[in-house]
Image 1 (cartoon, rainbow, N blue to C red):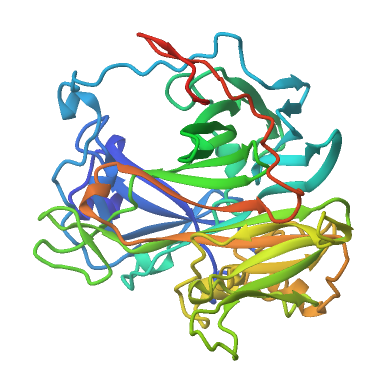
Image 2: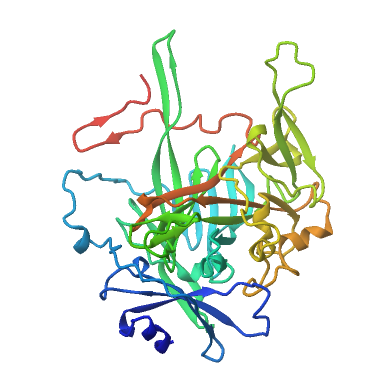
Amino acid sequence: VQAALAKRGITDMSLVCFEPWSVGYFGEDDQGRRLMRALVFVREEADDSPYAHPIENFIVIVDLNSGEVVKVDDDQAIPVPSASGNYLPKYVGEARTDLKPISITQPEGASFTVTGNHVQWADWSFRVGFTPREGLVLHQLKFRNKGVERPVINRASLSEMVVPYGDTAPVQAKKNAFDSGEYNIGNMANSLTLGCDCLGEIKYFDGITADSHGNPLTIENAICMHEEDDSILWKHFDFREGTTETRRSRKLVISFIATVANYEYAFYWHLFLDGSIEFLVKATGILSTAGQKPGENSPYGQNLNNDGLYAPIHQHMFNVRMDFEIDGPTNAVYEVDMEIPEHNPTHTAFMAVDRLLETEQAAIRKTDTAKHRFWKIANRDSKNIVNEPVAYRLIPTDGIQLAAGDESYVSKRAQFARNNLWVTAYDRTERFAAGEFPNQATGDDDGLHIWTQKDRNIVDQDLVVWYTFGMHHVVRLEDWPIMPRQNIGFMLEPHGFFDQNPTLNLPSNENRTTTTNTETCCTT
């Protein structure tokens, strides 16, 4: 490896950075070896950002069991881009001084109580868990309604994710990391810091896990929990009486942040006072870059400077597994589309039409924004005030699908990302959307697409709902040298779960304290 780099004029190995990626599967390397594929970068100086200087067309394949280099892909040399991509303060210069501090205080403390890993906040109760592969896991989510704790979700977590690249260049075409299943994203969790990663009255939970050798590992402050103000929850100005009623919303935030080489993924569960739940991924960090000859312009990426550096187009695809328990373990799923009725004399009619999804094959679904599609998870044995099944609805925001063709190796391995909704009858062994062991797997024998071939009944059963969503990352100049946060996720909302708005009992005169005054402004 050093000799090959020397031919390219790179001799100071202290500045060379090897970044291990999973090898994936491309019809080869099926000899039982445990391999990693190292991309190679070089720094100009010790704290320089290496991603500004990729050594293109140079890949090192390492056998992790034997510790040997088994292959060096050393193709046509391309000049290493030399322009800086630094973002540290010493390179950027003085920080601006015109932004005044924002103070977030809760003088009486936070509204939640924690006993061990059990949390009680407003009407919500749940348990916090953590695993090496999934990171943050929420267990036994319940909502107290009229004095009764009603189950909503038994277990919710990130199941899998994949990041396929759309560039056909030799090095870039084989980038398709399964960051959860191949890398153990929980083990890459950050130890979070007050005032930077989280702000306010914070409760931290450690991540108790095991390292790659099976030794006990504690990641201190791996999970952060705090409350945030969330603007208005509901409001009405009665113009006849000249009176206003306003209630402010707040949310409980439970989060962890993982660094996967160049990228940071911040995962957030938000619980709201009205029973809504949001799962949000905030993506930041540094682009995975590539090199080309200066003056070239790849159709598969965005030039980041005029020195041959570009960033390929790619996707971030996530799958979340939710073991629902809406008012109990027997649930059903409906697809809801907006339809225009055949008899429409006024040409203004449209309505929501429910369709029961009866089997696992029937429940393999894609989003359809033209039909304003969403899905309801219902308990048909539990009825609300108008004798309809109580339910939660899944609002499929960011419901994109895998862009790679079905014949591609990554698509065969990540078939969960071809569709947005999957529903399975509960099976304790079916935990991860791409299968139990995705490293170097072909996708032929495990995963959602295999399990659902059983086509089990999913009506009034113990159900698991799997939702796939993602970000189609068309790179922009503003993403360099470090990417501003991008938000993607989805919402779960009560849909006839309550008989009316469950937040009518919120106080009307919450004090709002600032540095200059105190107001009571929710009722006038």
